[in-house]
Image (cartoon, rainbow, N blue to C red; front, side):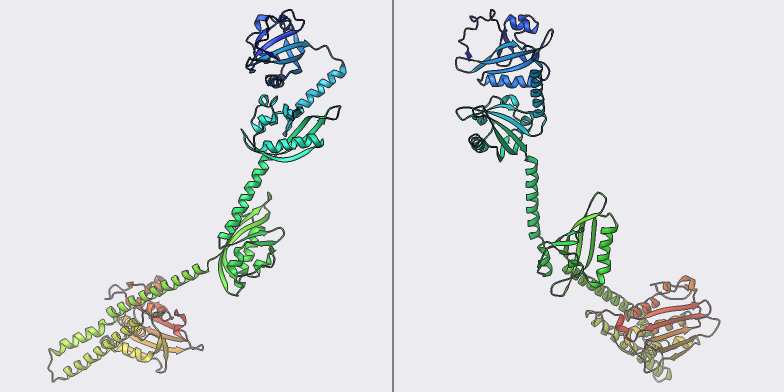
Length: 627
């Protein structure tokens, strides 16, 4: 090696038969003799300060940079390079010697260049082969390197392909010429040195897996080193190949974390997670299945029938057939349904089932991942809420109907009582009119008391389930009571009323409702009578073969056009004869009472012919009533 104390000026620099040059630490020419300048076809003065690499042929710079790095590391390097001379390409044998300072620090490179004589054809073929091998090593994806085995048991990099830098982020010029312990970090270094020593001593290929931290990040690779022996059988080189496993390891780790997360999710959720392999028609149940439905799985996965057999028979067609249609006949990715599923104890759970269908590129179903959620408590709560809402609605409707009864049905007996009381104050107490008025007053007060009693009885039951409890009602008796308050109006208009209701007819319902129905229908007949003929009202009741009861109230009054719609006749405050006094409440009450008792009412009417109301009651009027 040369150092600063070596008297280069005194050396036969210019008189040397060889072409020589000196490079500084950056690889620029410091000096060159005339023979070297002659080889390049330029003046000596042109070289100082210019870069050595710029005179190399295309493709030679990277390799020469590695050799310069080795020389800078203290090694004497000999190699062949192609340079660009003034008269064309030039091949030179180069010998590079490190120049050190007095403190043994690298200061530059001393170079000797010898023209390469024209080689025979065999040598050219060998050079070409070496070039091809170099190209191959630099284009393969795996990391490839060569280590020189020194006598002291240390290992120095003599070659590293481009994949080495691409994988580790360490430039090739910093690798070539460096010792292994200067490139590979701990904790991998200890393992690496052990494996190198094993290969050197056994003279066999050694393979292991290694993970190290480099500028590019954490790199995992499968490393193999193969010993190369000299003529004496001593290992003097190791050829290494590293297959980068970083991405595969990252995928494996991500999959492991995902599987772990999925396993914990299965433990945390109360849903029954499943995986249906559509191609094999098997079903894999998660842990939630046993917890949710109480089954003990003897094997897992099970056949697809392990699900279908437990779907409620009434839901099978909609749910199972519906799922198969979505999976096999569509390209949909999502499916969901709500159905009943049998538990191990035989009871039925209401479940919400949602699944995601995985399909291939052609749209064929491969798997379905889904979850069954037991929503039985929620459905029970919804049903309780629905029943409570219906109950409150019925109670509110009852209260509204009773309010109308008080404001509408009580008016007539109350008005009669007020009229008779006023008359009593103006007539002779000893007269027949007085006695008759007292009797009529008593009758009106009794009617008023009966209605109030019925209303009070029903209101007292409004908090019971179903509002009120139906009772057997003597229809003929109630009809007579309702008509007592209308006798005077009927006589005043010259009308006739014929009632043909059997005394033995009893219908389950509400006495107050029947009273209101008869009173309102008959009062409407009187109010909307025709002036062209005497009023006639017929009330009949028949019992059909099925013990259903039909009550008909028919008159020959004004009638209405059916085109206006019979349903409109029962709307609140709906009136068809505005020239007649009225509030449009009576028929609304009639329909509400009928529906409350589980009955049905229809109307038939023709203008100037009359109107017929038909009331239908089932054998038990409470059959249509909520429990």
